[in-house]
Image 1 (cartoon, rainbow, N blue to C red):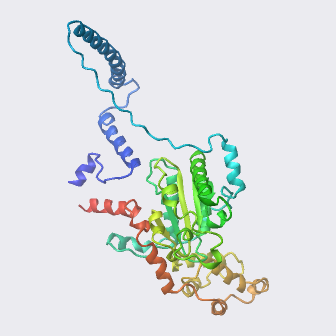
Image 2: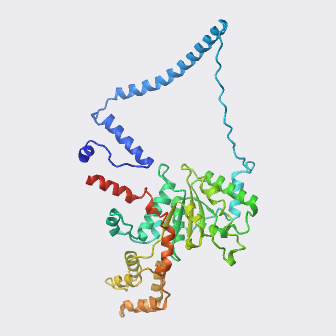
Image 3: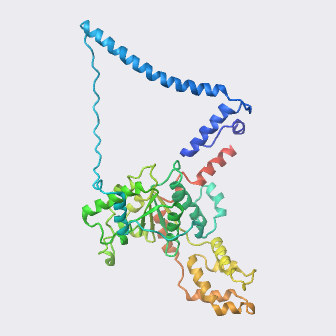
Amino acid sequence: MPKKREANGEILVKFEDIAAEEFKEGFKEEKELWDYREDSSKPYLDIIREEGCYELQLEIRKQVDELMRVELELLNVALEKDGGQIEKPKKEKKSKVKVPKDPTSNRSIEDLFQELFDNGIIRTYPSAKLSDFLGDYSYGSWEARCGGFDPPQTLGDVRNAIMLNCILPMGVQSMKKPKSVLIVGHCQSGKRLLANAIFNETQCVLFDLSPKALVGKYQGKKGLAMLVHLVNKMSRLLQPSIYFFDGAEKPFYKKIPTEEIDDDPKKLGGVLMKGIVKPITPNDKVLVLGISNQPFNAKPQLQKTYERIILIPRTDYGSLYLHWRRLLMSYHGVDRNFNVSDLALLTRTYPLPAINTFVEKVLSPIRIMQLQYKPLDVHEFVEVLLDEPPPIIDQEWSKYVNGSRKRHWLRKDVTLWALRQEKEKLRQS
């Protein structure tokens, strides 16, 4: 039965986003209007006639409405002469909508932009690409997800999540987009690289609202209210815009560290949700982006503020294999058949910047000159690994996993895997 319906041109998958609904309407119009027509150089008079009649009806309707109003007035005058009572229509009460006052209405946009730029709120960002975040996909996790399991993600999956949740929604108006995204990861996991890649890929105006950027600026309740007003006003005028929070856990600290008390890191914690995140509408190309390496030090308000949490996992075998091979094969003296697989197994869960350090320590200028008569050996890297601190342990890693599980990006219905799984079920039926 589903195959017959597919043969007739019907779409069986239930799409939820607006873009898919537009495609569905287009397919329906194609089937009803053009399928039975043959290609011809002559104009289709029936289509032209229908469009012309529709436009003519709209014009005539306005004229008929005016005539009806004139006749109604004449009837009311005649009824009044005969001594009748005319029922006057009740006046509708106009609801008074309070328009918030703009305290900066007398200032130009250039003046406001200059103020935010001088205070470091609007700033430039270093160039970066999403492809600079290296990592392989979890090819073996597709069957597990179809079976209802949730296997661990890899670095390639994170790159895909950034594209779907942060970059594409800022350019495609009809695509569902989250208001706020939090990138969580341990030290040297690539959080800032991903943030800079998002800034460059979207070509946005960056509003840096990190606690360090606000030290000594816009103090007190009036100053805080002015800051929220300025960033909300300018972000709509300069779309696409991104609010950036480096250290997103700090506005929601459970306990402020003694060395950060003077910085007042919780300044925006009380107004972040109501004053910045909630006013963002689906038509606004505005995103709240935060990065954090200690989300477990924040109150539960952190997870409520950010709609999506993208956890950068520990490095896996596939990503490490690609990274090791890319680094070592750049040296001409290294054998093309060098055993990279053992190195990828030995350095599992080590961050990629640490791998770069290992290669720099082993392949010194003198060692590079010796590669012609003394081939590189895996044991040379093992000696360096023994001197380095171990990577993040499982007990510490479990804090990151538990802190991001409730609002993880794969738990949302708009993920690519959910749509593919629905297609797969419809094909099997």
